[in-house]
Length: 142
Image (tube, rainbow, N blue to C red; front, side):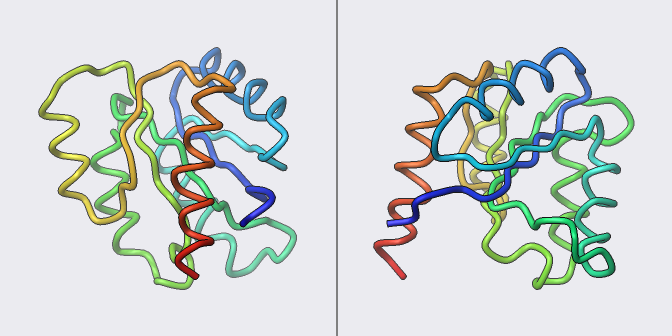
């Protein structure tokens, strides 16, 4: 069983949401590091910079907001799926949204790179569920 999620990347345009979610993730014993960016574009830049900057840690988990200006979550996913496999392999992407639109849930299932769809806000219990569902299960399969 995997003991820790080494790196979490939060992608949300709302500073207060990123601040809150960063605090929650930081308090959970199974999540080691957390970073946040305020746009899909910034997240893509972070991921592509992993090739050159070996001091950056590749995320194991991305929490992605759907409704953002300039590049929304769906647009991010289209670009994310074009990245080199070496940059995206073994990253679990979870949509984190206030949306209760069933179409958003269906759309997330269609995308190959989306592992789950959960509603904001993050909580320690929710992080337990994410860890147990997506990381403990993954270790059993390996």
